[in-house]
Image (tube, rainbow, N blue to C red; front, side, top):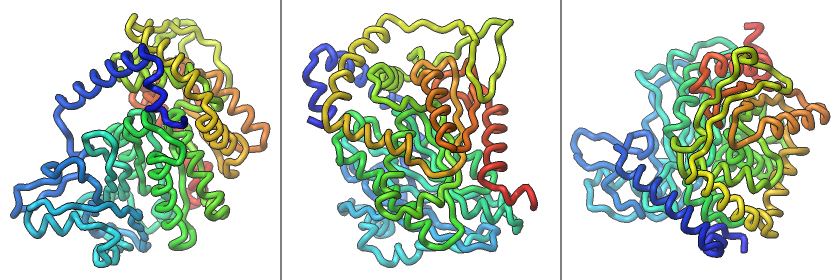
Length: 441
């Protein structure tokens, strides 16, 4: 009863609408040229074969790039995630075959990359963990990005950044390429970054305790291993939409159960385009509609404000009247069907109980770290009023909270529409709340 895929077969109209939207999305994706950021690849001068040639049903492997020398005086441990999926023989060269052995059965690989001396390197490096998904194509679970060499020096501020990992938790339907812009901004300033995304198929086939939650456990365990490696290491979470925010809540639950001291290592949380702290069918319908239709969705369109009321308001309620785009007839129909569907799904006992637990953790069990909320009155998925209501609750509980309303920018698209304001908010938050030592360096 806790499976979304099982419930999908009940309303015939819902199945038809979502199937059409899914087929449209699949066709759109399959005929788009693939990019190296989405599918891990390895170039070798003596081999013409690539990882993309492997049967997609055997995509589980860990690709660890050679960690070069970055100029830093600190030794950074980067533990490999505990992923133990079988890798078949592919008939490639012995060099290629050696990469596809199970990570947990390769002590040489583990010993080689358990820690790396970061000194000067010509380019940034990263390693990627891929896991099998229920879809036919491989999708990256998460990627670790190392700081850019020119962002590292011997100052106390640089040392603090090198001991901080920013964890980017993507929105519904986000892929690694969508988070690259954010990761590049952080790594250019000397931070380590992890980008985490869910394949859409795993969300649609969600079961309590199923594959999606197992993947969150892999990430949480990896972060805990890194934190426990040596003292002085910290985390900053940057979440997107309700999907990223709920993922953050599940990680907090894991930390709380595993070792409550891990909560104290979280130095800050940035929430982009969230939250709605209740299982709201309309919000879920809007989110899935936007994920299915992508650029064709009205949720991706920027609103315009009247000249008299155009502007920005920080940390307060807004009264701006916006000229909003109207959804097409097909999107309106899809929204109605999805809303009826989620009225059923979100009230299933197992699903409702799980969401209530995670949201409860986020309401009252967050770490005592500063929070920054970035949202917009024009957001078609997450109402600004819900965000502002949650901000007030957090402030009443004694937490340090900042907020910025971008007024007219669409859902999870504030950075692209106003990068100057977005990055200034991030920089100020990090300087004041996370990297306090940098003020005196």
